Length: 198
Image (cartoon, rainbow, N blue to C red; front, top):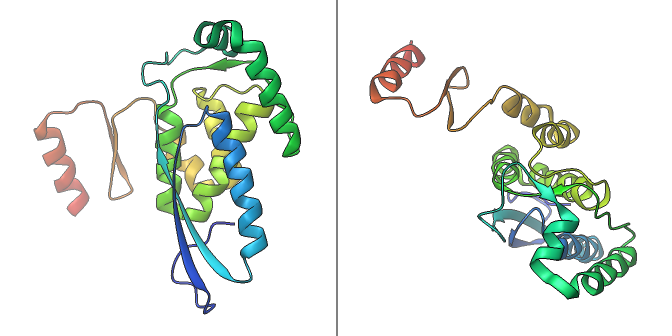
């Protein structure tokens, strides 16, 4: 669906920058509608879609909380109306809205989306779809490392390989081989540079 620039089709290139959060239902609906519009226009245009992070709730807990409880706390008496409306909207795009599972901090999902973009914008677009499907239709937790790895595996082995060995952040991979984790002092980086240069 998303194609990088440099296409030799002779079609006009349309660049689309999307800012979204991995737990925003309207972002998923918007993506699905964008995908339909692109499919209807692909004979006229080539597309380059790049995803950018936006945090609806930067203070959301990393450990996750019940989606239902989170919505009740955030929306109060309007929760049922909002959920009914989202269920209807999702049904209109061919999906079943699932409120089971946890919600929480989306930082790790944004990191993975960013890295996917470095591997290719088409891979980034596909990863966003996998994350949305899991979170909104299968009750997966957006902060769960195993879910993120599973989504990366579905899109590309390189994404899975990149993420599999990271146990904490910050994480640095130097020249694709040497890995450092944590807030290392300058001396550690200097030694790593020397090793990498050999």
